[in-house]
Amino acid sequence: MRVSVVGCGGVSKSHLRALSEMESVTISSVVDIVREKADSAALKYGCKAYYDYETMLTEDKPDCVHICTPHYLHVPMSVKALTQGIHVLCEKPCAISAEGLSQLKMAQLLSDAKFGVCFQNRYNESAILVKSLVDKGTYGNVEAVRSTVHWFRDEAYYSDDWHGTIEKEGGGVAVNQAIHTQDLMRYVSGKKTKCVTGHVFTDHLKDIIEVEDTVHAIFEYEDGALGLYNATTAFSKNLPVIIDVVCEKATLRLEGDNAYLITDSGIEQLHLADNEGFVGKNYWGKGHSSLISDFYDCIKEDRKFPIDAIEGGKAVEEFLAIFESSAKGDKVYLKKD
Figure (spheres, rainbow, N blue to C red):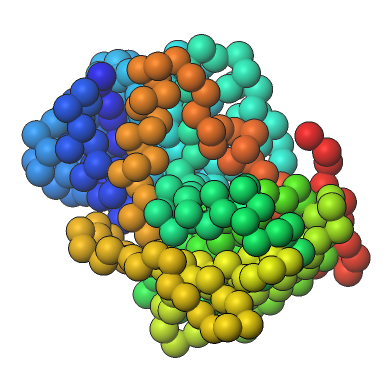
């Protein structure tokens, strides 16, 4: 299968590394409007460099594209490929507006090609373990979920032409960084979000960025359980993300890619992260290779990829509800599936 990676920034390294290790895949091209980035990636992986997406689609005719571009390009690039019957694996978020998400869902529905969203932390061994324990009801029903994301982004991070802008990034910490945590809260707990009460702030680099650096939200789930979500990029370090799944008999904790069981008797370690072999930033997790491998297995076996526009779009619906709630000063109800 011939594959093109579109966008040669930081996260593309995880995609290119994973693809280069797959026997059934050939990296046929890379694309970036910054010629030096495209040329460097093409030289490293022995493929053709393009500087225009549509030219690549016309000339290279790949079987699949990986969209690793700035957020505002995710929908138009994904729709363009799906319309041509080309499989798409898109970095998060798959959309930054309700209109864009609707357009993407329709393109997926009308295409014979597969579409997937990169929520790679679902494929971390710790997340798989905790979800399995929750699904089995090992420690009783889930009563609550809470999470914290304390990360750091300085002025240099926003020095390009899209980070920190409403138009191109779509939002700050809620859209770019903590969206993985927001997704995992719902995924590992098995909950469905009924409504959201959210608040967003810009406490750091206020005169430099247009987007929020801090978000606080309460998720009310359909079964009455609550989710508490706190995230910021105004801290001084990038600390491991913590998610607590509070069950009737114990609390299951994810801390980075470690998993713990917390009971009245103390804390027991269930899984210890393997910190070898990271590509990019270690707090991204190591799930990219497993997710990408599963995506191609889904293509080969003609089965649905589990994180498509509908499932991957739930995180978009939630962060849009957070923004709306913050603006209105009241809770916002999500549309039912």
